[in-house]
Amino acid sequence: MHDQTTRQELLQGSRRSTSVPVNETNKFREVFLPLIIICIACAPIAYLLSLLITELILSQECHKRVVGYYTVWEQKKLTVNQLENLTHLIFMFALIQNDGSVKVNEGSHTTRAYDMKEVISMARKSGSLKLMMAVGDHNANVYPSMLSDPVKKENFMSSITQLFEDHDIDGIEIFWMFVAEKDKVNHSKLIREVRKHLTNLKNSKGRNENYVLSTISSRYTEYREHIYNNEVLKHVDFLTILTHDWANINKHVGPVAPLYGGPKDSIDDGMKYFVCQTKQPSKLNLGIPFFGIQWINTSLPIDDDRNQLSIPTKAGDKSYSYFFWREEDAKAFFPSEVSWHEKSQTPYMFQNNVFYGFENEKSVQAKANYTRIKNIGGIAIYAIDQDNKNILMNATKSVNLCSREDENKIQYDCE
Image (tube, rainbow, N blue to C red; front, side, top):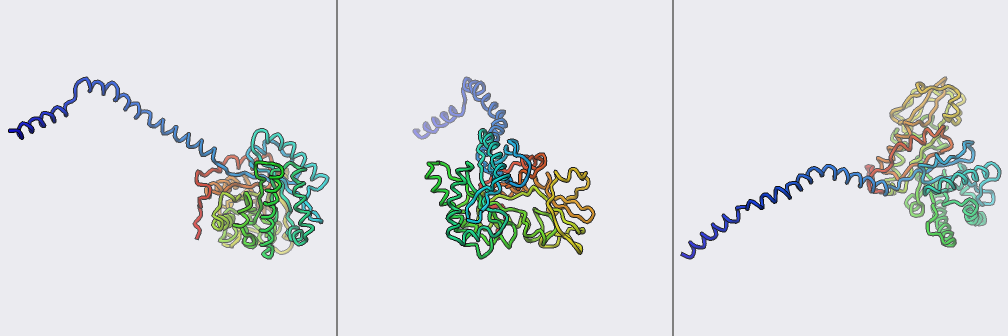
């Protein structure tokens, strides 16, 4: 009897629990249902807001570099507009003297340096632009000669301090372009010792921020393997891979800085080498030359099957000279005369057995996009005063270098 009563009570309780009072149903309809509808309606807006906030955070966290070289030999004046998109400006050159000391040569070089400082002072008011000086030049022998003499080396270090005093710079670049295999150790030691010197200089001045130190290398196998890249990257803020190389101009007539090419020595091949060896793409810059080269006594077509893309040369003189769009404007070249080489992603012209290799907006954008896709730390423009009407500078500005990836994520198939 007790069990039957209990079962009846449980059934009644069950029936009571499954019934909902009318007032509670109305409350649900009046309060909770509108909230659910609002949430559903606002979901797309919330999603878009989250994307915008993420984009803002990523843009603030993006630390890609845009380095511009500024030369002593060009005539074009520096303007504030040229500096708008730069993170670093490097003045070329502070030269190594016969006694090992470093200075900007008197005369037109010094005048150009001071003109630059005047423009830099205006640019610094609205940004965090770093001013640097490249120490050295295109002569491969200046560093080995200085390092072989203890007195010259001491003069070198002490004069670096004076360079900072005279020009109010934020850092220097060791511009040792053609490092021979026998100089690998001396090159690495020099980078380490200069970093130590800059740290001591910073501490003596009570400066909070480290001075910037950078150096360069070549995309070509015969030079890039002569540097202890991992050891060097311990001490520098960035390493720029100069994608042009005068040492090979007489050997290979063709695109000055081919993005892709044969299995050897294209920009892609060079950048893959450095990234896979160092695992630090964030510390690398891809160099973009703003000049071109013209060769005489040549013929088409470009040989796409060679390790290094090149074209045939005819008998006789095959000399070359620099080529700039601003100089050729007066010669009435038309855009229709410019051809596009698909494999190297570079433009060229061929007229009267003269081959012109150079960069234009399309090729510069291709290199900037490559930098983003491959998660490289930045680009380095050689040189901003070789650009006519800032056409190529504007082309680089049109590409967002930020990849949204971890700064050292490898985007190459490293074997």
